[in-house]
Amino acid sequence: MEITTERLILREFKESDWPEVLAYQSIKFQLAVVLKSGQQLIGNCGIRMEAADAHEGDIGYELSPKHWGCGYATEAARAIVEYGFTQLRLHRIWSWCIAENAGSAGVLQKLGMQAEGRLRDKEYFKGRWWDTLLFGMLDYEWKAHKILPR
Image (cartoon, rainbow, N blue to C red; front, side, top):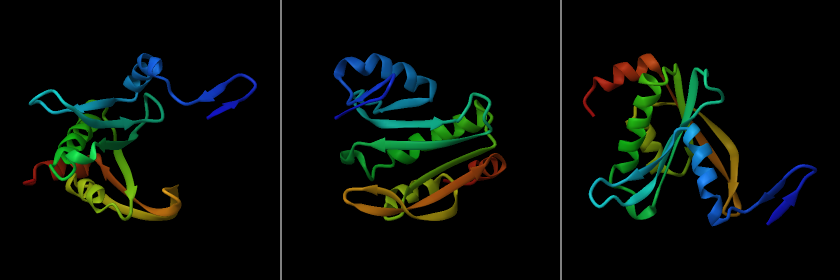
């Protein structure tokens, strides 16, 4: 697929694009998730902000399906949330997931995020519309949650 505008070409990625992709993804705190034992890449996890001085950010994570259900998403997301609150000094961190994705909703709840809403027919893929759930956490909620047993 290719779309052309006055100044741009929008095209599918090529293998040779990856050095540039890595460079701009690094600015967004998008990190590879790698198993310590064996150094196997199993996914990614990151936090995005609208600007360098933003007070909020949204987290996201993707893991290879063969590594679902092992707690890796929760472990990675917990680390990136901690980074957002301690290093980036964010006031609010939020995320969303497909409403039917109980696993991802469970990850966000385990982090201590609160359900903030349901957006009806928000995402279209796999030939249909999907509701999404919105979750969020404030810095003082995170501080209170992190001292509780996990």
